[in-house]
Each structure stands twice: as C-alpha cells, then as structure tokens.
Amino acid sequence: MSGQDSMGSLADILAARIRASGPLPVADFMGLCLGHETHGYYMKQVPFGREGDFTTAPEISQVFGELIGLHLADLWLRASSPAPVQLVELGPGRGTLMADLLRATARVPGFHAALDITFVEMSPVLRAEQKSRVPHARWADRLADVPEGRPLLLVANEFFDALPARQLVKTTLGWQERHVDWQGGRFVPVVPADAPRLDSLVPPALRAAPEGSVFEVLGGAEELALLNRRLTQDGGAALIIDYGHDRHSLGDTLQAMRAHAYADPFAAPGDADLTVHVDFAQVAARAGAGLRVLGPAGQGCFLRALGLDIRTAVLAKANPPKAEALVSASRRLADSDQMGALFKVLSLSHPEWPAPAGFDA
Ligand code: SAH
View (tube, rainbow, N blue to C red):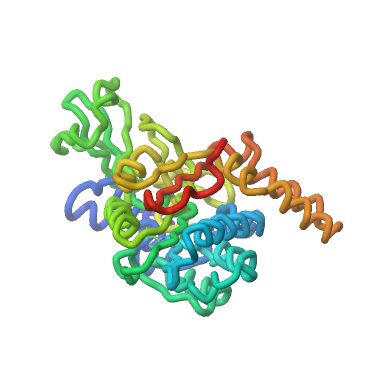
C-alpha cells in the first residue's frame, strides 16, 4: 500500500477507477495523466525548459518560430493577402513559437493587420504563459470553437504526440486493445482476454504481424477531420510538426519524459510527460483528402530550405558572444543525428492556394 500513497492523488483516482470498473484503455490512461482537470501533467505546471521535463524546438532557438512565420507570411502574400485570416496554433506551450513568428513577420505589409490569432489550449497554466507573450490572442478549447468562414493558417508543433493514442496488440485472437490494470500496488499494461477484436483499425498490410506486435491508433481524429473540412471550405494551409514516422509501422512508442530522461510511462501518473510517435500516414489519411499534401519532410531539410543557415549566420554576426550557442541550437534542430530527421513536417493546403515553400528537396 505504501506504493499507492507515495504515488499521489492521480494514482489514487486511477487505481480506484480501475478497481471499480476494470482496466482502463491506454488511451484513457494517457488522456487522464495529461489532461485530468486538476492533476493532469499539462494542467498543473509549465513542463518545458531546462528546469522542466523536456525542451521543444521553439524553446531551443528563436529561429524555429521565425522561419515558420516567414513560411506562412510568404504563402499568404502569394495567395494575394486575404484578410481577415485566422491564424491558429494547436497546443502552443509557452507561446514562444507564436511570439517569434510575430516578431519575424512584423514588417510584412498588411500581414499583422489581417491576423486573428487563436490558441487552442486546454491548460489554464499554459494559457497564462501564452497570454504573457501574445496578449492579443484569443483562446479556444478545441478547433471546433475557432470561428470559421475565413482562410486558415494553422501550426501544430508537438501537439499530436500528446493526444491519447490507442494501442492495439496482436494476440492469439486478433488485434485487441491494451489496457492499464492496477496489480500489486502498480499500474501494469494488460490485454484483457475479453477485449473486443479491433482488426479493422489496423492497416491491412500490417494485420498479419506476429503475436505481440503493437499498432498505435493516433489520437485527434476529430481535429484532423475538422482541419480537412475547414481547409477545404475556407482555404489556407496547415503545418504539422512532430516526431514520428512517415509510414504506418508497428511498435510501442508510448514514452514518458521526466527531468530530460526517459521514464516508465506507468510509474508516475500526472508527473511525467507521456507521448507517442506520430504516424504521419494516419495524419495524411485523416486530414489530407482533396488537399495538397506535401511531406512529411525531415525538419532539417525543411528548415534549411527556408533559410535556417543564413538566418543563423545573420543573428550570430549581430551578437558575437552568442554566436556559438546560436549555431549549435540550429544544428540541434536540423542535423539528422539530432532532431533533423526524427522530427518531420507535413503541410496540408487548399489545392488552389500556391504551393507552400520548404518541400522542394
Ligand atoms: N507547441 C509547444 C508545446 C508542445 S506540448 C512547443 O512546441 O513548445 C503540447 C501542448 O499541447 C501543450 O501546450 C498542451 O497543454 C497542449 N495540449 C495537449 N493536449 C491538448 C488537448 N487535448 N487540447 C488542447 N491542448 C492540448
């Protein structure tokens, strides 16, 4: 019982729920660990930065948000500068990307005046951070609450990896959902024998995989379907950036990060970040129909095509004491043995809009 006490109250809540109604699907467990109203990981703290549990691209270098800003402003100009335009960021974290984006585009004629900025964010703690950096933004709980009827420019960095994913395990019976049970004072992954068969959720080419294989069904199905509808109906473009794979693949990618190190995803509910790798083939399948789909390109190729090295050199020259740090931050974002290849960028846009830059290579 001491394990239960030391694990704190979200653990108690989850354990009580499992005792009352049986094991929880991994997706529900993940959703509660991250988003439980009071104890969820994102709901109670600011998790990023050196003192937090992990660092994201906008927190590594200002150049990341700047180049995304220039990418979107360039596209907007070539689309004949529609106004107003709805600029949306899904899961903006501390608001750093948007602040850098806005600073870099301040001199693009008419761009700022055309923008209506909405952050889709569930965490009150992070909303306050975002407000301190982008005071004139609006906030929404879901994409469905963002006004429609005007072209959409959307960016999502490390958002889809944080949405609850379903894990399907190949068993003697077929593909069944992995759950989380409470056994002997610990949370453990199990596949209940009576869990229904969900073979139809697994891409046909992977269904014959050996027993024990895991296939993950990406979360965010509603957001992706809605993104498709909005881009089709209102025009515009979206950039989805995350770590993951460009083709359907097998494997258990659920991971926990605590204090910049990997941890057991079941050990400390609400106190560690939980993510899965994003299957970009699922993103494209759910959101891409009828749209121009570019990529996924490696983040390194994308940023370099947009001028990462030139921008870094300009900044380094203007600020010699910081030159080395700027160059190494850009390398961290773009080199293929760092974030440059594992992180990928997918662009979705209205087919009649001009082609978004950065995907030529
Ligand atoms: N884009 C930021 C933060 C990534 S972390 C960066 O790159 O630094 C994930 C972000 O998504 C956090 O802001 C988190 O609070 C938010 N988030 C996670 N799940 C969400 C959901 N279901 N609805 C809205 N926001 C969510």
